[in-house]
Amino acid sequence: MFSLFKSATKRWLGKRFSVYKIPNHNLFGGLLSERAAFRIVDVGANNGGFTTKLMEVFDIQVAAVVFVEPDPRCMPSLESLRDSFSRSGVKAEIIASAVDKDDMPKELFVTGDAAHNSLLRPVEFAFQEVEVPCRTGEQILSSTASLFESDGPTLLKVDVQGKELDVLLSFGVGLAFFDYIVCEYTFEGFYEISTSFSSLMALLEPEFDLVSILSQVYDLQGRLQYCNLLLKRRSC
Image 1 (cartoon, rainbow, N blue to C red):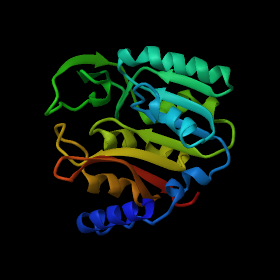
Image 2 (image 1 turned 45 degrees about the horizontal axis):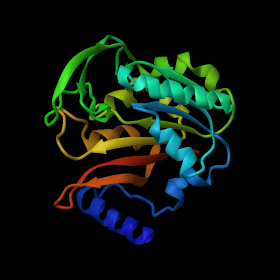
Image 3 (image 1 turned 180 degrees about the vertical axis):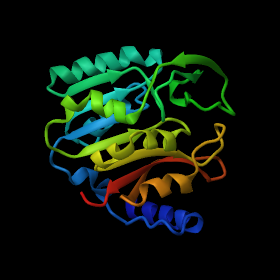
């Protein structure tokens, strides 16, 4: 069933993005074959569910994680998770900030569900504007360097509702630090001026291969609304 699903997905992408080849790899593009503990930067962490799912569902080991999240409503859950991780020997830090190409404060469009928050104006969600601090990806890597001193694979997860390209650009040469990138991409116009698929791939394709897509969500007509792109650095 899994192979049939992947084949159907590849055909779908092939019709729309024929220049991008997705190898039919199992093990989620190599993630599950890694034996060493991961070091993770989670941008748009929400309540930290991404890392806990990796650990609990897929039994992936984690050595260190940085949760980056600007919404104060998520802080109690993240603080509880950080403390739980610390007790179990996982280094964890929270950065209460948005991420963008500069570190000037930004207006965050806060929706009823923190998963839909964005620095871009929502088209389909009710919102209120809240000013939040902002950092660049390079600043995040610099301020948390001590968490990543151990060896092991590195993963950057980006889930920022349409601002993916600017977040990735903000890491500059720091993108080369990561072995894997998990990046949400939205095919529907939920936000104004969202990242285009071609511009996202133009940035990443020189160094990363698109090896799998995860967590697909479809509309009632069977069209893909959004998914998570899994990319692996070619040299790792």
